[in-house]
Image (cartoon, rainbow, N blue to C red; front, side, top):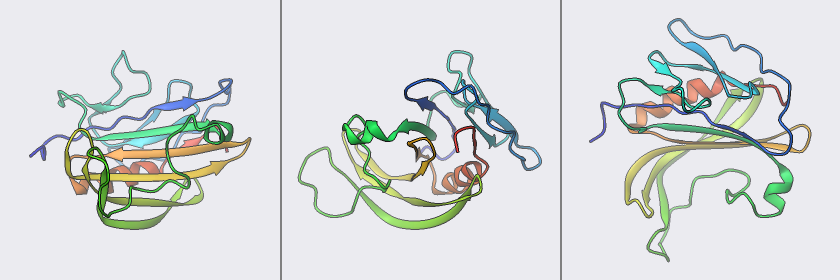
Length: 183
């Protein structure tokens, strides 16, 4: 069991031209600290011990973790990428449905819960659940997904894989502090 390791990565991928706007500083709980994406278009509060490796300017993880076990990914992409099929995520963002698998690498979800969280002043549907299957053979892997549309024909997509269900609560708390330069 991977229970003792937790990591957090935040990756901001912006399509088309990079925005010169800078996300505002989030108000962080005691012991947490603010972190910005490489282009400063996204900022969020991070739990203690999370650092940004020098070779990954938009990734944060615990220094003590040898590999990345928990993962939060934040993409800001143009709606056109979804329309052209360049983004494979379903919209609106949902975890895979439970049910019979047709393919050997399919993923199913159990313990699915829908939450409505306030993310940057916007009400956002966030789903949590446990994933099983896939090419890597996940077994009840805690996961989270969220997505919403923003101005200027852009869409935010968030996906999380965690090592323990409790980590999802921590990463949901981090997500609720998200500030975007693109609103």
